[in-house]
Length: 149
Image 1 (cartoon, rainbow, N blue to C red):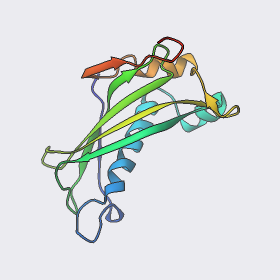
Image 2 (image 1 turned 90 degrees about the vertical axis):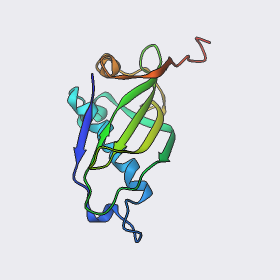
Image 3 (image 1 turned 135 degrees about the horizontal axis):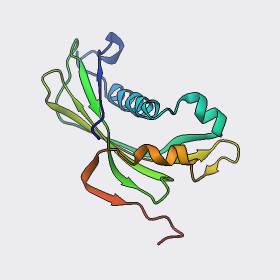
Image 4 (image 1 turned 135 degrees about the vertical axis):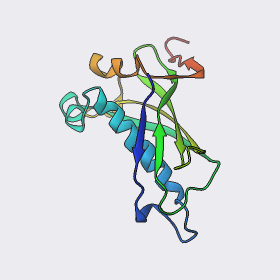
């Protein structure tokens, strides 16, 4: 299933060169992930209730085309990797400018953290299921865990 979020950019997203500052791209990707979770009924309150939250190990951004002051953007979400019970996940975001041109690609590698033990954990079933219907990239690969390798 395709997931795309449209954003109206803000003055604070731009730098002195009158193009989107580099960290704003990642902010919009993070907002897209939270909206994706929310679409599946997982809110910040669920993280607190279940004592589980998402963490990132890596975040890599490749910039392809400028986004200029006043342009709106769209950001998608695709899964590039997933472990058996959804403990670890790799997500790709593509950021498009107002003309629909690919402007950046953001890849993140993350997992679920037990917020009390401060250790990686298998998420509750509700959290495991959120990536089941997500669009996958052509190069999608299962993420093996050390105990599975």
